[in-house]
Image (cartoon, rainbow, N blue to C red; front, side, top):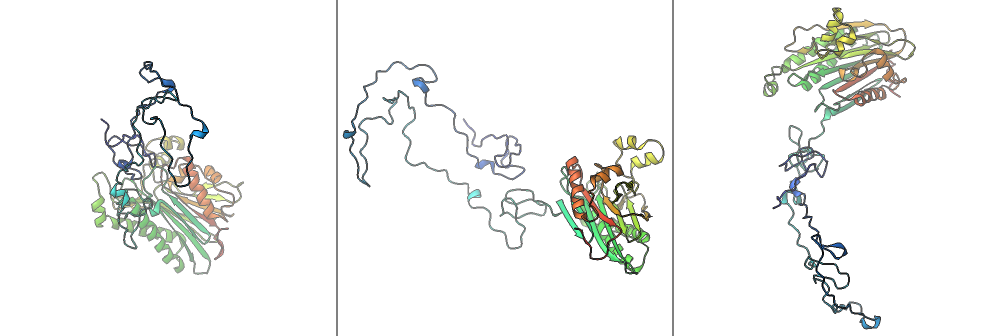
Length: 433
């Protein structure tokens, strides 16, 4: 006896692999009970006059009647034609072809199965202002980002973000393996007391093993940006302003540990909310960087005959091994412990030790501020410079998109965030071409 629900190996809607007993597709929410059962595969017509089981016994066939065209009576429009003279339809053996018909005459009308009321009626239209599912376009989206009607996961706002602020730009992407984007960035422009412009970019990478890593990175980037916007116009030296911004970001992340949301989501194996931070400030004559963790800043000159450079040193196990002379860089970063960070922002950090540095490049170029989701695929400065388009200084948003694409093409194992800041800072009002 056939089961009422057909056994499927893949969803007929999105081809997602299914397991035995699934009633709904785990990827798109497709109702598997609505799939019609497969009909019995039992042939009822034997070709060449022989059934599947063997030859029939010889049966004498009556001679077929021969009709002349004049024997067939025509019909006027709307008049029904007379029935055929011989009992051909429904007989076990057709006297003309010798093909056996085991099925009974099919009815003129088929009885259709009543539609599933869950599919036919659909859910009621949500009130105005309610977030509606992008798949079924009717179900309400719950707080976890899933449709209450079809179960479809909704794209998150932070899955892919792009921003252009005057001459600088940034792009962040969830990547190909993570279920959410735990990176965040903030861009800003300011004016120094002498009237000269200043631009900055802050990029933060949430620590996945911690509670609420996405909230931590967002809080840190916003707090750092607010501190820079307040300090730079007052004449605070950019390097000191960067130090104060990192301290402000640390306080913002620490405060998340006391929020009720952290207690609700905390698991025994997780730490308090945490993230890394890296930032850069560019003025007409000065380039300042600051960081805690393993996100990086690269310098790529417009004239590619000049060497590029990495401007930060990772707070990581691999960097410590190299600095101590215990391993060379290739050996250290090939170790499975390479990316274990030794510095971060968070309530359970060992101590806050912001790193800052100032540079005065003697030629134009671009500053690339990024998380390890990018530099894992362009680790050396030469590799990063090769991935940066030649027109990066005048097309920062395009450049950020290209670099994110470079990481995704390489595998996209992590969230990817990159900001592109031209040096020197263009005059106010100048933007990307």
